[in-house]
Amino acid sequence: MAQTARAIKRGMLRLLPPGLRRRVADSCPNLRKSMPEGLEFVFAGYLGNVRVNINTRFKVERIMWSNAFEPALIHLLKREAKPDWVTLDIGANVGAVTLALARFTAPTGRVHSFEPGPPNLLRLRANLALNPELAARITVHPAGVGETPGELQWQEETGNPGNAVLGNSGTHAVPVITLDDFTVQQGLPRLDFIKVDVEGMELSVFRGARHSLRQFRPLVYFETLDRYGDEHGGKNFALIEQLLGGECGYRLCRLDRAGQLHALNGGHFSDYTVAVPAERT
Image 1 (cartoon, helix red, strand yellow):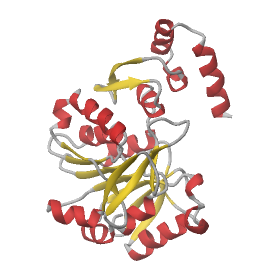
Image 2 (cartoon, helix red, strand yellow):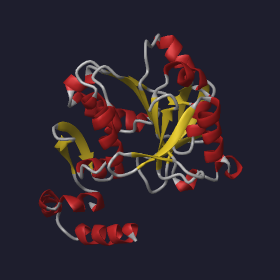
Image 3 (cartoon, one colour):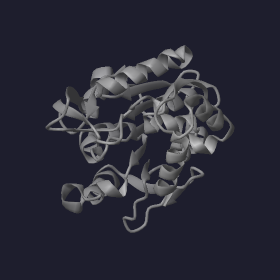
Image 4 (cartoon, helix red, strand yellow):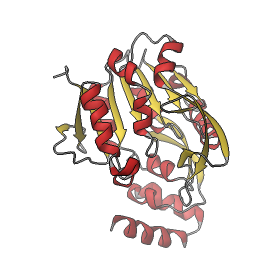
């Protein structure tokens, strides 16, 4: 229903001249997610005062313009983030979460941002250039993250520009690393938070992060959309729950829109899940 309503709005907005579209969107923020292609500008109000490039061709940038990007996560970070956190953004895209992590862990927190796709990397770096104070605490790693090091192909999703998957075929060959190798190579003294949004590859990321999860005990936020539940013979989420909840000693929680955590009962996953170290109250 929501997608149908958005398509209707987009069709109506497409009839307006670009200049009028922008004025309408400025006065009606709830229309921004439905804005059709054709507008490019710098938005100075993401998360209050963060500057980001907006091109309405890209869904994620329309959502950032509307200041409705993963509100539950933003609420969680506002409540939980500490000024000295070391954090990872795996699947950074254009930096919506990377910039949020830098903002909410100021003034001394560090952010490691992983994005393998060359087109997305260009837009990510451009957004960081708009925010030099935040960028000074962000390190961009042009790589994917998985179970084993190597190389995969980056392929943009048809009909969803900027969104992509890693696999055996695609348009760009990209390097893949493991988190366990990364934390050792970087000599990380701590690791407090990990966000993982990698279009169904979350299990692969966690399989390559077992040692880091046991050593550092970070809070972990990851995508569990229904469309990825059929991966691994329909056992994708059960395997993640077994690895995180059983092998690594985490409890899995769903996150409501206010950023509050609730016990995950009976394997009923919502769009995003938070893994909390079992020893934390």
